[in-house]
Image (tube, rainbow, N blue to C red; front, side, top):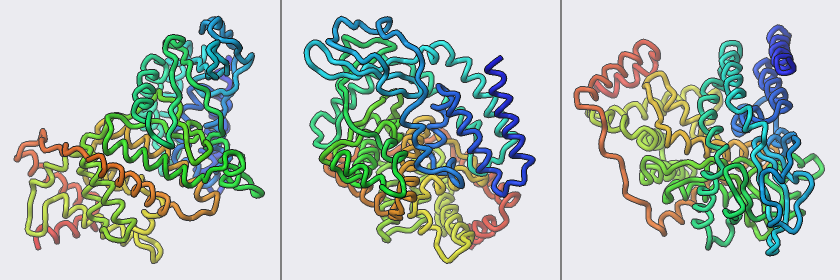
Amino acid sequence: MKELKRYWRLIYALAKVRFSGEANKDAEYRRTIFYSFKEWGGVYIKFLQILAGTSKFLEGWGGPKEMEVFAQAPREPLHLEGYVDTSAFSWVSDEPVAAGSFALVYRGQLKTGEDVAIKVLRPSIRENLKHDLAVLRRLCKMFSHLLPRYLVDYNEAYDACAKMFMLETDYTREMANQTYFAEFYKNHPRIVIPKVYSELSNRHVIVQDFIEGPTLADVMSRRSREISAMELTKNLTGSDLWEQVVLVGGEALYTAMCADYVYGDPHPGNIILLPDNKVALIDFGIIASKPSSHRAFYEWIKSYYDVLDGAGDFKQLLEATVICFCPDLSIAMRRCDFENGNLLTILASAMEEKLNCEMVSNLSYVETFKNGHLMDVLLKVVGTKVIDIKIDMVNFELLKAMQAFLGAITILDNAESHRDFSQLMYRSVEYAMSHATKIGVPNDIVNRTRYSVTDSYELLVKTISSLADNDEFMFDLVRERIFA
């Protein structure tokens, strides 16, 4: 009955917004969902973390203070003795020192002297996860019918989250992920991965080194008019926050270019800020596999770098985006060759012209992109009705990881009035490309496609037909290029 009441309270609150005289109802819908889910805890907070990881969800109403959703969640009763052999410890904290959406974290010391964190899967998650996911699915369907979809597609958000949530409850898998990254970074001068004590851990408990320090979420939520996040970081750690941001962003891109896995959950609550411009990464329940092609990902990032550097064109970036994230389709499109280029090249040049024409100010779309709209560009390219593009799960997970970090940095940069997002990204990309070049990027370009030659030309006809039906402006641009 208590559960039913809280759902009705949410529905009633959304209905009030719908029939109110609010000028920005979409922002009020998102604010209402945010604070309701934050109060409910568990799965709902984890879902919020995915949504709040994009600056778009908080646009128009939220900011760095809402980043506290990444830092602390409500606590719940738990008898630690039932989960871990406490005889191996000289002492253990009576209460959790941290509370995440899925786990409670206690602090302790092993009899051998090591300070450790004891991460325990919440009993409520073990017992209620499937039920809560079913409820969340129904709520997302309701949101998608009742609420504007301009900024958030709740059904897509749910689909992206459900599988990841189930994986996050298997700590055996998480320990294997963490061990991989500990080995990968064992000689890195500035990245710290806590050691796992596997002999004391199990499917629902991870015992690992305790890392002392504020998280990025802590400094974002605690900043104020009187003290900035950068000043807080300097006071607490002696480090330069922006150097740490560049490090995390650069490493995320670098691993996508060269490693087998990419850290999949780089939200602000999982990034611990340390002295000497170091950072620690925690929580490896989600990792992303390497992209379909390391080389194509490198070329995509390079095309982005060229735009930031003023040396590249937007058309090249659009082409690289489709080649990287939809390699199978890009091969079929490039088979359709004309005097002014293949179908992919023609669509990219037409898209560039259209996007620049759509700008309401004197800024070019490239300038808007440089100021933080990386995901906007991708969504406009791969989410267009012109082409029915489906991103495979591997590349989708990778994009989600990137989006979580980029969204947080966009919010932080705006709040700090740093106004230099493009420079932060430029330095991160430069860092990644430099490291990747030294190591050597695998030459693993995808060169096979399920499309036959006939299928490729059917795709051409379908594309032209879709343009004629849905986008007269784009149709004219493409027609001119094909039949010039």
